[in-house]
Image 1 (cartoon, rainbow, N blue to C red):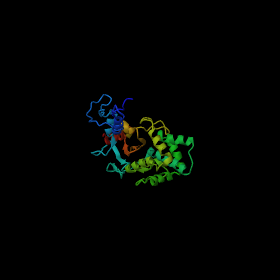
Image 2 (image 1 turned 60 degrees about the horizontal axis):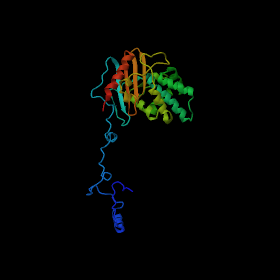
Image 3 (image 1 turned 180 degrees about the horizontal axis):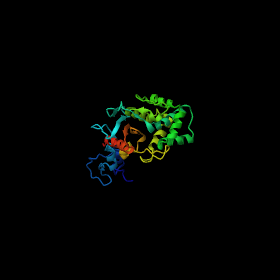
Image 4 (image 1 turned 120 degrees about the horizontal axis):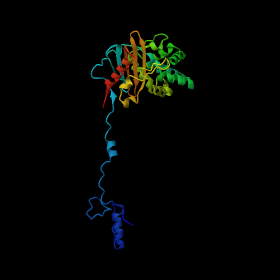
Length: 304
């Protein structure tokens, strides 16, 4: 029988020598500095260089894009109101425009995920489940910005009680409620960023429905020109257009927009696992406001 690799066995001509050799060498690994002539099967194997897979594992991945406060203040031309806020959801740090804790805008359709979340959370708290028809209406409220559905579930939830619960559940500081008009509730950018965090951390919809709300917010559809009716209004524009693909893939959004005599009141909300970003504007056209939200996002992106 051939000797195992790296082991030696001494063959002797007498039984005594065999016994002695066995006692001395059996199960003893030959040292690499052995002075005798080594055959090919006995030669020590050189240490292999690390494979590409090992090298890749040992080398840390370069950091991807992220959001951070800009070195210089952000300015938007031709706006009668402009503010933005970025909440780091991991550290709780809030940054933004100097007026982000003071200036406020009407929320418009940005509040619709809350109306849906509040309804679903309260049902779950009562041990009930929404019908498939109700879920379809809530879904369209978010993805198509369906106004009739928003009004329906606002009334089901008790009208102004829905917006009062938004204040208490999400811990907002400066929420101003306009009686009977959910769209004219006013928020500061900082409160709106906290609202986005509340949607994502489970307080708004509860543990059962939070993932559903966030997923619906990734499905928002329609461009600036897709103002078809009060039931189908578009809404996939703004912040998401200013983000690199890696970040956009993880973002849930909901914008709000309505034309008033002083211009379009526009809010752009984007929620990421690590941050919540809001831009609030009043501008002459919806397209200009959408592009301004996109510009703010682009300025905040840091690569590496």
